[in-house]
Length: 532
Image (cartoon, rainbow, N blue to C red; front, side, top):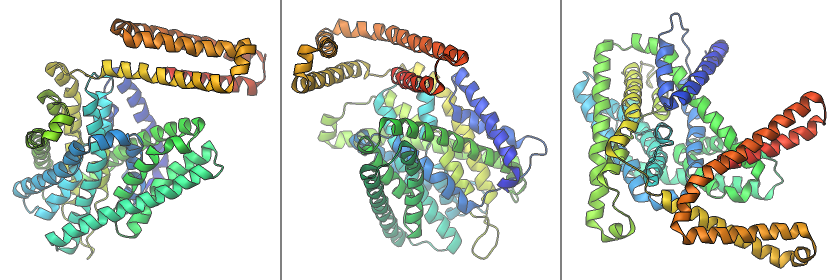
């Protein structure tokens, strides 16, 4: 069990953290390193077998992973691109699940259609972390990133519902299409209702109770588990409860969190998601030797061939889907053509090729029960786990490593840079005007009599004047693009100078430790602002 091998798991997590740092140096997305790490773990001689009960896999891993994905999603962007997100998140998941079910049923001996749908539900959702970490720092259209992130929220929910229905069909041996369709909508709608109800309650606590940053961070960690467990208790979708509740709280986060709470929450969730990703891949790596031994009548070479074929099917299905899903609605509806610019076939192909599978698929596979209701071994469980791991490995390595060359080959460039710069200048202008209006109304007497107040007032007045000139002059905007990075680096250098001085003061005992820590906190906030 896990508790008996805790030191081993912590050591492997430490090793994976080191590998992730190396991935940053090599500029390779860390999910690619994680899946390779899982494979390498399985090859270590004498590695002990570690298992986690399937019922606990969803309970431990899904709520925080889904909540983190919702937390990083902009509701306004999500709603703006709801049509392509829905077509990918629901339509493509169902299409992929059906295609994988049909192919695996024909390809693998004694592999039932229900088992095929179970496998399809597991491997149908692409992983947003994998795609965005690969695309990070590349000049790609913002629209593509928003669609990929929004899709991951919806497709996780849709695929896990397909997974549950297929699992129920295998466990009971019965499946009624129309009954399942009605149950699907009831499970989805009630899950959303429960998620929103709990999110409103959590919002009320954050908003009207005297919380601290530590309590706020704790609530954000506890909330997804409450949403998930409550929904599952009433036999509705815990996944949709977490997603809907997370989106609501994300949208209202500016009303309930102080700056200290936001900094703590962001750090907490980044660390938690990274560790959970690493832990899941370690878990599959530690189980892989036993999985291979328990693949019934299938050899490793046969299982690999099945997995590679199914991987190619998932890749081709996605590419086949994205083009009709993009262009048919544009051809049929004039309103879509008027509201949305033509994305171009290159950007559509980029979204189609960004279908790497990841941790949610692996967690789903690990959650497949060990036995049926009559205590017989679950049919093809080890084969399903093996195929899932190979599909993740295949798509992450093939598609993940080829994305950058593909972007260069297709000459894809982000088209929002100029508009974003102008938008940033306009935002700065509006904020400076608001400050100036407030000072003139509230502090008019102090500005007239006190030089310090006047200097602050004049600073914002100059900011308005300079920003207006930049907005009027396009060349000034272009100059700003080359000027700002150097200016920002200078400010970062000044932060580092002050930090070194504080460190020397600490060693010399020139000032109290409490005072030095307060100044370090201020410098940390300033550096965080500059680096963002």
